Image (cartoon, rainbow, N blue to C red; front, side, top):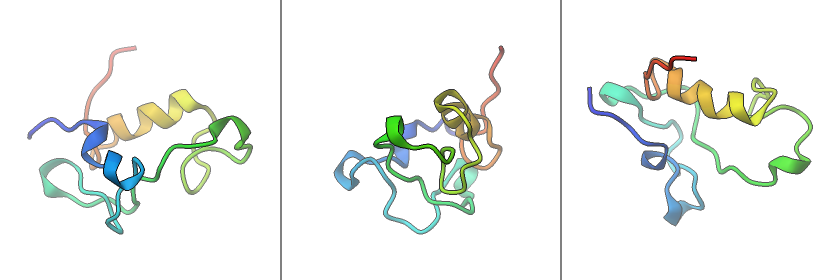
Length: 77
């Protein structure tokens, strides 16, 4: 398994988003979402991600890192 960086999906030339319908993660697996651009988070009140599943910016950053399809990393807390 090759390590992935956030920038592998959040491409600068595409406004730090992914132009594919589903972003590609570890072992060439495709998730069920697209890596969306991160912007205007200070005014966003309905949770983060497309579906609002992260209540805080910290959660929004850690969830993709720990997701087994996206980045599949283990973090010690």
